[in-house]
Structure formats: C-alpha cells, structure tokens
Image (cartoon, rainbow, N blue to C red; front, side, top):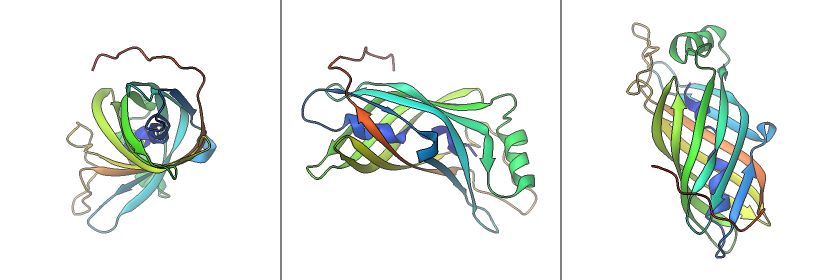
Length: 201
C-alpha cells in the first residue's frame, strides 16, 4: 500500500556514493524502467502488488553527502490483482482521492562504490504519506558502470503505527507493516561541480 512512496527514489543513491572526486550527480527516474512493488503478509497468504511512479529526480553531492530532489508515486495506482482489495486499500487506507501522491524528499546519502562498479548506500529523507511526514532511510545496492545505473532497494513502512487504517477483517488479519521493493535502471549525469546548499534536518 504505502509502498509506492518510495518508491522510488532508491536508484539515486548510487550516483552519489560513487567517485573519489567530488562531483554532483543527477539521476532522473524513468517510470517505464522503475518497478515499485509491495508485499503485505497475512493470516492466509501474502499479498503482492505494485504502484506506478509519476516522476523522480535526485541530485547529490558526492563530497558532502547532501542530497535533494523528489520521487512521486501515484497513490491511486496500487494494483494487487484483486479489485475489491485494491479499492479498500486506495479508498479506506490510503484515501487516495484526498491524498493522491506519495512523495519522498531526499536529504542525505552515503555509501561505497567498489572498483568493479558495485555499490551499497543509504538514502535518508522524508516520506510524505497520507498527509503526514516521516523520516526514513532506504538501503540500496546495485552497479554503476560508465554512468549507467542498475539499482534495487528494500524498506518497510509501519503503516498502522503511522496512523493509517488496519485493513484486517475479522479473522483475515494482515501484517501491520508493508515491505517495499524497488528496482530501476537509469543514467547518471554530472552537470557541474557545485555544492548543494545545506538542508535543515
């Protein structure tokens, strides 16, 4: 459900954790090449589904670790293959008509890029979901070779703790947190050697 948020965002961290030289890296996410999936455990089975990315662009300074940019997911696009379940998720839990977007705002990134192009990174930021803001950290890994990025990421959202409705019905209970997996490919650009202004944390 909440998964979309993130969605997506993850792909950018690699660009920043990259080089030994101080550079500013920018990656623009392509919705057609970005997959945002969610997984919600339950008493009878685990529900799998996906959300659609609207837009996404992340910019980060490899020297300071400062990052900026946003990733926007369409809250009404949640699709698990069951229309009744999806309508309940979008109307009762996410209230997508009132809160049509799930947005991630990047703040900081840190990580490591090895000589073979493999990387591991953490992207910190704020997730705007259902009218509230929550600080999150997204763990990611992948490859960055010749400015070509392939990245995957995983994180969990404690949606009930964050105040969203529990969709459990009688004995059909579901987990109180949803797991998010993101996969994307893209190209990192290095437009200029410039510093990103400090953000208030």
